[in-house]
Length: 188
Image 1 (cartoon, rainbow, N blue to C red):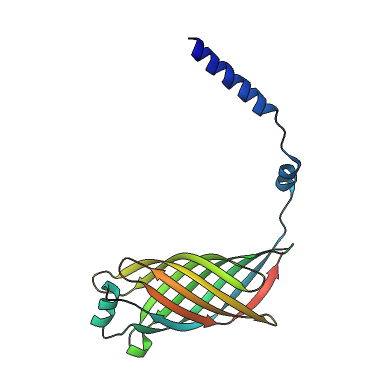
Image 2 (image 1 turned 120 degrees about the vertical axis):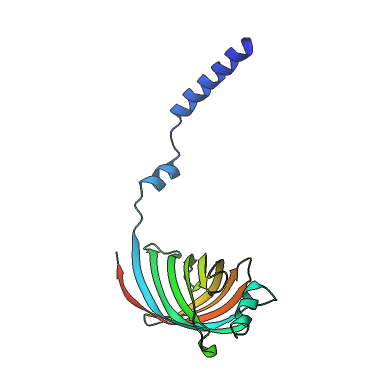
C-alpha cells in the first residue's frame, strides 16, 4: 500500500512539474516562424541505359523475350520542387515514366516516383517506388530505387546526370539517366 501511494504521489508531482515548464526560447521561435518557400515545376526528356547484373529471374525474363542485360531508356521527367527562401536544400518530388528495350523491337515500360533532396551545389539523392511492366508470369514487378546525381544549371536549364540502383527480389538494375529540364516558373 505504501509503495502504491508513493508511486501515485511521484506521478502527481512529475505531472504538475511538467505542466509548469515553459518552452525554451529556441523552441518558441521555431514554432512561431512561418516558412517562406518558393515552388518550381520542372520537366523534360530523359534518356539512358540500364544494366541487369547476375543470373536472376528478371534477366531470364528478358532473355526469354530475346533481350539482353543492357537496355536503352527513353521517357519524360516531371519534377516539383520546394525551395526555402532563406537558402538551403531543395525538396524534390519526381515522377519518371520510361520505356526500355526499343533496340530489341520491344517496349518495356516503367514508372518511378522518387522523393529526395537537391543541395545548392547540384548534388542530389532520392528514393522511392518503381513499377516495371515485363509481362510474362509476373507482369508487374516492383522495386525500390535509390538515386544519386548532379544537376548542372545553365540559364534556367537544368542538366541532371543520375546513377540509379533498383533493388528487387527478382533482380536488381543499375541505370545511368540524363536529360534536361526547363523551369516553368517560380511561385511564392
